[in-house]
Length: 306
Figure 1: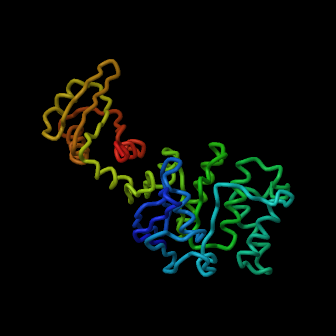
Figure 2 (figure 1 turned 120 degrees about the horizontal axis):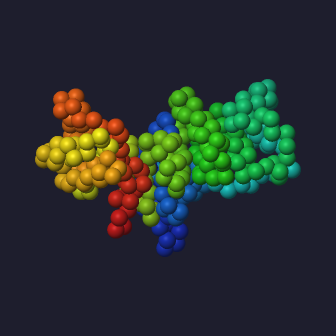
Figure 3 (figure 1 turned 180 degrees about the horizontal axis):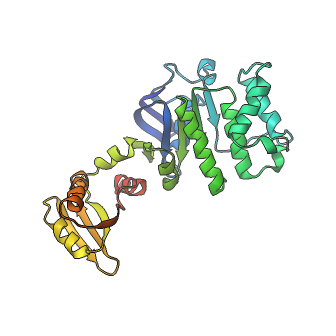
């Protein structure tokens, strides 16, 4: 749906985005990066708010800048608010739908449909000026979906939502993905991204560090040992068995916690060996996790020294 071909955007002598090449298709993709990484610049290029300084950006096979054909198939939920505060949420969504090409015959049913989807039906008749931050986020999502676009861009959409609201919001995104829609969500909060999707784009100082599935990206970091922690009723026996594997670099035992931590450069081989330790050797492993198999660890490794 979206293609970047060596696209860069400069603001005078300041680099906003530097030589980006990637493709974004259906499903939920997270655009991850710290503030100033280039996420908003990338969103503005996709939505046609600006042109790339060099390179090319294409959406649905067309150049998005000032292109109504692209806008008709795209929904956008910006990170900042710019509401007509006197309107009710329902009237705001209805007007945005009409502006987006929804027919007068269909606008009423479509408005109720998206308000229901974002959980705002019972509050939609109140003026927007009285909305909380979370309610404003929901209404912005409703207007982004009102014309049933093929691709939706959400810039920091979870800001201001309480834990229940975040979970419901993520559920809506998954429903859109299940219908074949493309969803690009920008965020700088690592644990939120992991809950939404495993398909990520990592930006750092305007550069694309990595793109793809989290597990595949993690596999690229083979220069760093991978830590795996296990709990066992007999941690010393477990540690002794682990120490016999050639790919295990170190073994630590914490008998107070009945815990063993190993490091390995071949985690997949170790996970395969775990089954044998349990079934063939009779070792008991009551819990297992990896502090390195998460997005925060991946991001830290990739940005280290950059």
